[in-house]
Image (cartoon, rainbow, N blue to C red; front, top):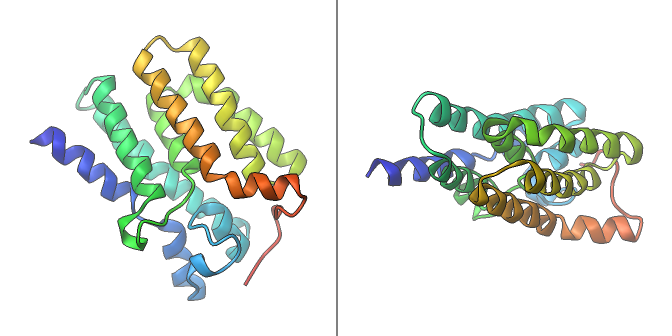
Length: 198
Protein backbone atom coordinates (compact mmCIF):
# COMPACT_ATOMS: atom_id res chain seq x y z
CA UNK A 1 0.00 0.00 0.00
CA UNK A 2 2.81 2.42 0.91
CA UNK A 3 4.37 1.96 -2.53
CA UNK A 4 1.12 3.17 -4.05
CA UNK A 5 0.56 6.06 -1.65
CA UNK A 6 4.06 7.53 -2.04
CA UNK A 7 3.95 7.97 -5.86
CA UNK A 8 0.37 9.26 -5.54
CA UNK A 9 1.55 11.81 -2.98
CA UNK A 10 4.40 12.74 -5.32
CA UNK A 11 1.88 13.44 -8.08
CA UNK A 12 -0.10 15.85 -5.89
CA UNK A 13 3.08 17.50 -4.63
CA UNK A 14 4.31 17.95 -8.20
CA UNK A 15 0.89 19.29 -9.16
CA UNK A 16 1.17 22.35 -6.90
CA UNK A 17 1.22 25.19 -9.51
CA UNK A 18 3.60 27.60 -7.80
CA UNK A 19 3.93 29.93 -10.81
CA UNK A 20 0.16 30.28 -11.05
CA UNK A 21 -0.18 30.86 -7.31
CA UNK A 22 2.55 33.51 -7.14
CA UNK A 23 1.21 35.50 -10.11
CA UNK A 24 -2.36 35.21 -8.82
CA UNK A 25 -1.38 36.43 -5.36
CA UNK A 26 0.82 39.30 -6.53
CA UNK A 27 -1.00 40.52 -9.65
CA UNK A 28 -4.41 38.89 -9.45
CA UNK A 29 -3.81 37.52 -12.96
CA UNK A 30 -4.55 34.03 -14.27
CA UNK A 31 -1.17 33.04 -15.73
CA UNK A 32 -2.93 30.95 -18.38
CA UNK A 33 -4.32 34.12 -19.98
CA UNK A 34 -1.07 36.06 -20.50
CA UNK A 35 2.21 35.62 -22.33
CA UNK A 36 2.64 32.11 -23.64
CA UNK A 37 -0.26 30.89 -21.49
CA UNK A 38 2.08 28.35 -19.91
CA UNK A 39 1.89 27.81 -16.16
CA UNK A 40 5.63 27.80 -15.55
CA UNK A 41 8.48 29.90 -14.21
CA UNK A 42 9.36 31.51 -17.55
CA UNK A 43 5.87 32.88 -18.06
CA UNK A 44 5.72 33.97 -14.41
CA UNK A 45 8.91 35.91 -15.09
CA UNK A 46 7.26 37.68 -18.02
CA UNK A 47 4.59 38.98 -15.66
CA UNK A 48 6.59 39.59 -12.48
CA UNK A 49 10.13 40.06 -13.73
CA UNK A 50 13.33 38.35 -12.60
CA UNK A 51 12.26 37.73 -8.99
CA UNK A 52 9.06 36.05 -10.15
CA UNK A 53 10.99 33.70 -12.43
CA UNK A 54 13.55 32.84 -9.75
CA UNK A 55 10.91 32.25 -7.05
CA UNK A 56 8.75 30.01 -9.24
CA UNK A 57 11.73 28.13 -10.64
CA UNK A 58 13.19 27.35 -7.21
CA UNK A 59 9.84 26.25 -5.78
CA UNK A 60 9.20 23.98 -8.78
CA UNK A 61 12.71 22.56 -8.42
CA UNK A 62 12.58 21.92 -4.68
CA UNK A 63 9.14 20.27 -4.79
CA UNK A 64 10.87 17.45 -6.68
CA UNK A 65 14.35 17.60 -5.17
CA UNK A 66 13.43 17.42 -1.48
CA UNK A 67 11.02 14.44 -1.52
CA UNK A 68 13.29 12.39 -3.79
CA UNK A 69 16.33 13.22 -1.66
CA UNK A 70 14.46 12.05 1.45
CA UNK A 71 13.21 8.87 -0.22
CA UNK A 72 16.72 8.13 -1.46
CA UNK A 73 18.88 9.02 1.55
CA UNK A 74 16.60 8.55 4.55
CA UNK A 75 14.27 5.74 3.47
CA UNK A 76 16.76 4.09 1.08
CA UNK A 77 14.33 3.13 -1.67
CA UNK A 78 15.91 1.58 -4.75
CA UNK A 79 16.38 3.46 -8.01
CA UNK A 80 13.45 1.80 -9.79
CA UNK A 81 10.99 2.98 -7.13
CA UNK A 82 12.58 6.44 -7.09
CA UNK A 83 12.08 6.67 -10.86
CA UNK A 84 8.37 5.89 -10.43
CA UNK A 85 8.13 8.70 -7.87
CA UNK A 86 10.11 11.04 -10.14
CA UNK A 87 7.77 10.30 -13.03
CA UNK A 88 4.77 11.01 -10.78
CA UNK A 89 6.30 14.36 -9.78
CA UNK A 90 6.90 15.55 -13.32
CA UNK A 91 3.50 14.34 -14.58
CA UNK A 92 1.94 16.20 -11.67
CA UNK A 93 3.76 19.37 -12.65
CA UNK A 94 3.00 19.20 -16.36
CA UNK A 95 -0.56 17.92 -16.01
CA UNK A 96 -1.73 19.38 -12.71
CA UNK A 97 -5.15 18.32 -11.49
CA UNK A 98 -5.53 21.73 -9.83
CA UNK A 99 -5.62 23.59 -13.18
CA UNK A 100 -7.62 21.22 -15.37
CA UNK A 101 -4.45 19.25 -16.18
CA UNK A 102 -2.68 22.25 -17.74
CA UNK A 103 0.73 22.74 -16.13
CA UNK A 104 4.31 23.78 -16.79
CA UNK A 105 6.91 22.28 -19.10
CA UNK A 106 8.85 20.32 -16.51
CA UNK A 107 12.26 21.98 -16.71
CA UNK A 108 12.63 23.17 -13.10
CA UNK A 109 10.96 20.03 -11.75
CA UNK A 110 13.19 17.90 -13.96
CA UNK A 111 16.23 19.72 -12.64
CA UNK A 112 15.15 18.91 -9.09
CA UNK A 113 14.73 15.26 -10.04
CA UNK A 114 18.21 14.90 -11.50
CA UNK A 115 19.85 16.92 -8.71
CA UNK A 116 18.45 14.35 -6.28
CA UNK A 117 19.04 11.17 -8.28
CA UNK A 118 22.16 11.91 -10.32
CA UNK A 119 23.75 15.29 -9.48
CA UNK A 120 26.88 14.62 -11.53
CA UNK A 121 24.94 14.08 -14.75
CA UNK A 122 23.16 17.41 -14.46
CA UNK A 123 26.27 19.61 -14.19
CA UNK A 124 27.09 19.72 -17.91
CA UNK A 125 23.41 20.23 -18.78
CA UNK A 126 23.28 23.19 -16.37
CA UNK A 127 26.37 24.72 -17.93
CA UNK A 128 24.85 24.38 -21.41
CA UNK A 129 21.58 25.89 -20.14
CA UNK A 130 23.32 28.90 -18.61
CA UNK A 131 25.52 29.49 -21.66
CA UNK A 132 22.59 29.31 -24.09
CA UNK A 133 20.41 31.58 -21.94
CA UNK A 134 23.26 34.07 -21.46
CA UNK A 135 23.94 34.26 -25.19
CA UNK A 136 20.41 34.14 -26.64
CA UNK A 137 18.33 35.28 -23.60
CA UNK A 138 15.75 32.56 -24.31
CA UNK A 139 14.97 30.12 -21.49
CA UNK A 140 13.19 27.81 -23.93
CA UNK A 141 16.31 27.42 -26.08
CA UNK A 142 18.42 26.79 -23.00
CA UNK A 143 15.92 24.21 -21.73
CA UNK A 144 15.83 22.22 -24.97
CA UNK A 145 19.63 22.33 -25.29
CA UNK A 146 20.01 21.19 -21.67
CA UNK A 147 17.57 18.29 -22.16
CA UNK A 148 19.56 17.01 -25.14
CA UNK A 149 22.86 17.44 -23.27
CA UNK A 150 21.50 15.63 -20.22
CA UNK A 151 20.34 12.67 -22.29
CA UNK A 152 23.71 12.31 -24.00
CA UNK A 153 25.55 12.62 -20.66
CA UNK A 154 23.39 10.02 -18.92
CA UNK A 155 23.74 7.55 -21.80
CA UNK A 156 27.51 7.67 -21.52
CA UNK A 157 27.98 8.03 -17.75
CA UNK A 158 25.20 6.06 -16.02
CA UNK A 159 25.03 2.27 -15.80
CA UNK A 160 21.40 1.80 -14.76
CA UNK A 161 19.40 0.95 -17.89
CA UNK A 162 16.09 2.07 -16.40
CA UNK A 163 17.61 5.42 -15.51
CA UNK A 164 18.73 5.85 -19.13
CA UNK A 165 15.22 5.01 -20.36
CA UNK A 166 13.72 7.43 -17.84
CA UNK A 167 16.09 10.20 -18.96
CA UNK A 168 15.20 9.56 -22.60
CA UNK A 169 11.48 9.84 -21.78
CA UNK A 170 12.00 13.07 -19.79
CA UNK A 171 14.21 14.64 -22.49
CA UNK A 172 11.73 13.84 -25.27
CA UNK A 173 8.87 15.04 -23.08
CA UNK A 174 10.57 18.37 -22.31
CA UNK A 175 11.34 18.92 -26.00
CA UNK A 176 7.76 18.04 -26.94
CA UNK A 177 6.39 20.50 -24.38
CA UNK A 178 8.56 23.17 -26.02
CA UNK A 179 7.31 22.48 -29.56
CA UNK A 180 5.55 25.86 -29.80
CA UNK A 181 8.66 27.61 -28.49
CA UNK A 182 10.78 25.84 -31.08
CA UNK A 183 8.45 27.08 -33.83
CA UNK A 184 8.71 30.64 -32.48
CA UNK A 185 12.51 30.37 -32.25
CA UNK A 186 12.68 29.27 -35.88
CA UNK A 187 10.49 32.13 -37.09
CA UNK A 188 12.13 34.70 -34.81
CA UNK A 189 9.17 35.53 -32.56
CA UNK A 190 10.19 33.81 -29.31
CA UNK A 191 10.18 36.21 -26.35
CA UNK A 192 13.48 36.89 -24.62
CA UNK A 193 14.32 37.36 -20.95
CA UNK A 194 13.33 40.80 -19.75
CA UNK A 195 10.26 41.15 -21.94
CA UNK A 196 7.28 41.61 -19.62
CA UNK A 197 3.61 41.10 -20.39
CA UNK A 198 0.38 42.12 -18.67
